[in-house]
Length: 361
Figure (tube, rainbow, N blue to C red):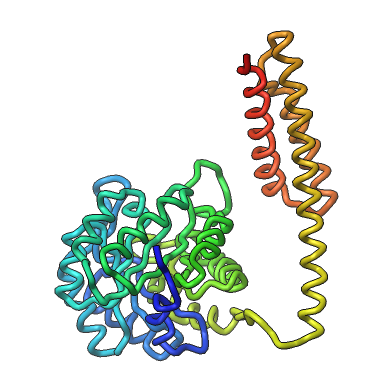
């Protein structure tokens, strides 16, 4: 996929002095509701108005969107406010209807990105469109699947592309509705630096009181924009009540957010940064050396277990290590969440090394 600076042109065309902002209700509920929110967002930093027309629900019986009639409401909102309009499309029929109603921005949701068949059908329906098409990450933390969705659209001749990071589903109980897994989005950003990257803090948090915090993290990581669900009466919204903010709160978020510079011409700063990064590189090299040595010890343990026909997994020993590392990590200013992720990964690699020894002839 040849994503180049040409693919950023649609973003540059907005000529903004701040990150791109897409905002609006989770769901279009009534014509009056759509128009009221759009008018309240008109004179703010919002460039694109979003509203869910079709809502994928986990189980039947919930509000699944107003459907095609909502597209006419968006047309009216655009005519009255001048804001561009954005909706989610989940299949080829949605995509065709969006084009017929001149919707400016289409995004493919997390539940659709996970299905290559559905993405391909949408790509075929949008062949060579000049509309902006954004791809949300799949519900599961699979970078290849996310990239694959973008590639299918790119191969269909769609050049105004971007991605939206909305977090990933997990069975673990965390403070997030969908855990960010920032490293996945950062890796995508590293592979395709000219592909616009937006963050959806509404879906990551599931809580309006955390949107500011996550939005700031995204901007600190040099994201290009934000998608934030906004409703004039969020407590009585027809979907996703807890994660929508009012236009007034949204405007305050804009005031409080701090946009960091990407670079600076300050020679003193750059000299200090080079020195610190060298220290990071040295520390990373030492970490790899230590981990390599640890795996050699794991292989020796595997050989000993093979000799005595002992099971690879020793839960009691593993729990002792984990408990000790959490305590030791806390003393060094490392969070329990980080220690758990780190040592689970190390433990899994250690198990793999032991299994190779035990299964060898």
